[in-house]
Length: 168
Image (cartoon, rainbow, N blue to C red; front, side):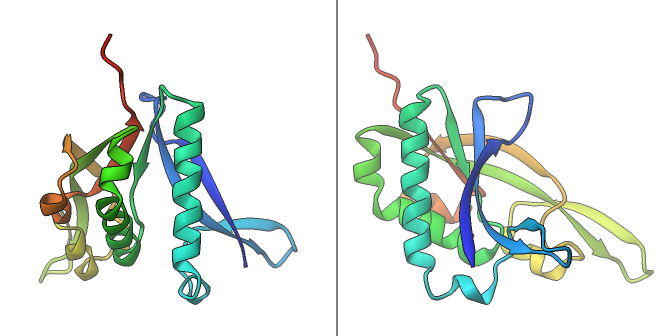
């Protein structure tokens, strides 16, 4: 399966913040190439190689666009954990050139209550989405940023990396 790193503006109101996604290129029934960001079994054998390539693309992008920030967010629990773990393991090296922030978020999750009604709640727990109707949270509420701390990484809904600003 051919994989591609995709870097795109996350929100038009913040053209300086980009999201980094890893997509599979697949053929649909009409032999057209489509993108899939689903986690498939084909990702399990080479995930570390793919992750390293993804991080190198991120670093190259920020070096080329020093005004930009990259937001890392895994669309599965596994990807979320691995992104944060890899960043925590390499924080010392990253911090020499980049500012790394933990992003605090709440997720809008949809439940079905006992009467069969859809109920929307905000949760800070990414894992909690397992018990909802939505595989991906419907919306995110960004609550703030803090310098990335290994001991707090379990609380981060995403990680933001940008070029360090030199004080002159």
